[in-house]
Structures are given as C-alpha cells and as structure tokens.
Length: 51
Image 1: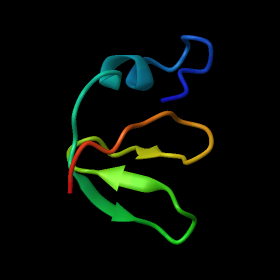
Image 2 (image 1 turned 90 degrees about the vertical axis):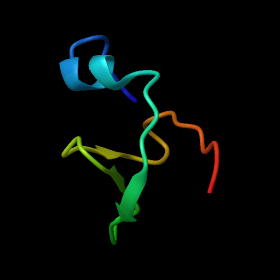
Image 3 (image 1 turned 120 degrees about the horizontal axis):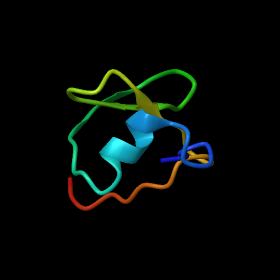
Image 4 (image 1 turned 45 degrees about the horizontal axis):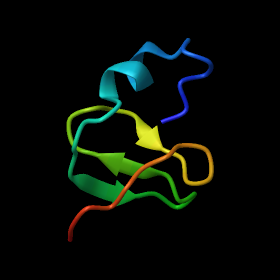
C-alpha cells in the first residue's frame, strides 16, 4: 500500500499481511475483510496469491 512517505499508519500496519477480497467497487478500489480501507490499483502495490 502507499504509505504516504511513512505517514499512513494503517498502511504501515497492513504491509505484508494476507487478506481475502470482499468486493471491488465501481471505481475499481479493492476492499477486503476486516480493515475498512481499500487498495487503489495503480497507487497501492499488492499481489494476488490465489483464487
């Protein structure tokens, strides 16, 4: 995730964790279970490891 130069504490705490995708919204943001935040394709880095 983009940590905004280390300023985004949520992104720092979630780095390296594995989550299950809950849904992709109409703007393409990827939401996952248990966090309340979303990945933004093209901004945040992520890896799909299974289906």
